[in-house]
Image (tube, rainbow, N blue to C red; front, side, top):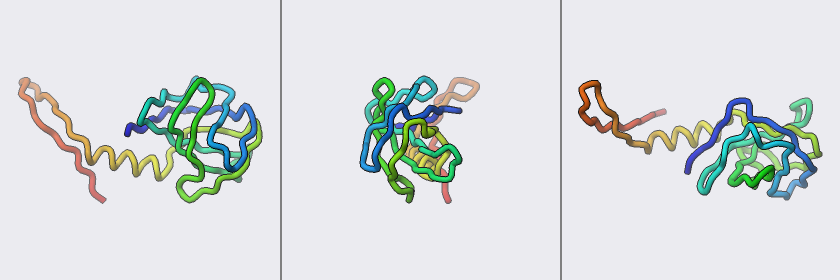
Length: 125
């Protein structure tokens, strides 16, 4: 799995969505990263005052349609009106997935004299 993130990625819903809907139609997807097979990005849906929010996990993007898994991170799935905010925000789930991905990552780096060095990233908590 690869977690996608984009600075200041935001849009609004182009049409309403019910609490059981799994597709979000946004006004523009231009500021969001590309989500390929196996990729995810965390989105926050919010009303104009940020008094109601829902975190969703986006698993696919096709044009301006996002396929999502609703009610993530102890939030509740609610109905959203057209014009509601859709943003990438830093969430606990995003950080947890990034930490899990980085603790499993191994890479090879080259030191200044050109020797290959195996490096593991281990983050504890």
